[in-house]
Amino acid sequence: MPYTVGDVAKLAHISVRTLHHYDDIGLLSASGHSEAGYRLYSDADLERLQQILLYRELGFPLDEIAEVMGNPGFRRYEALKSQRELLQRKGAQLAAMIEAVERAIDAHERGTIMSKDDLFEVFGDFDPAVHEQEAQERWGETDSYKESARRTARYTKDDWKRFKAESEEINTAIAGLMDEGVAAHDPRAMDAVDRARLQIDTWFYPCSRKMHAELGKMYVADPRFAATYERIRPGMARYMCDATAANAER
Image (cartoon, rainbow, N blue to C red):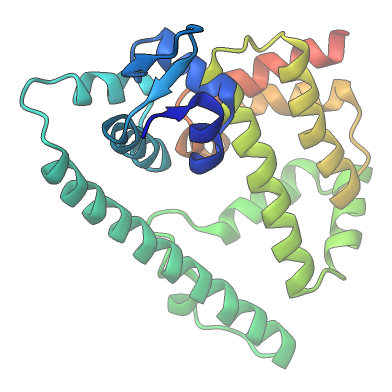
């Protein structure tokens, strides 16, 4: 039974525009068309879309996905096994991070101090305490830093969960625009990064568009900030920088 583009978008929880973009770049073309010329997708097309979305979840850019899946030696079964292994690694890392946060929250609620090993075992070479110290040294005397410290001091575990969910929604939307080929100076991109700005404004400190553009420059200049966005979507740090600059100018 063939599926319309609307059917596939609903099944895969992606936009029709994204499917059109995948077709435009030759990543996923519909196997057939109706008499009226509308795209019709087969079960095999749905399986290919699943592969694409799994690679996207793992952080692969679209051009690399096209290269991998376009290889004559590509086999879906082998690809699925490889994706399972990568997802298991990612899941184990996230589970360890969640457990570390839970222990930190528990220690804070009980008024105890965690050992250094417990504090840093999941971060590898990255020491969050050093990062926090640097942030205080660079911005500790600013009103923004003081206001952020004042607000975050009263946040609960549920508050941080809500913040994380908001952040993921915003970042996913921005990555989706990148996948569609939407330029950083496009109004849709500027609106998307403005949501990120308003999140900062709501949760941490007043953040003007001009200030957000300055933060955007830091997303590119500081490797640690850049890595945060690059893990979501390669090229996203530069996209954020350009979009925040455009948003500040309009």
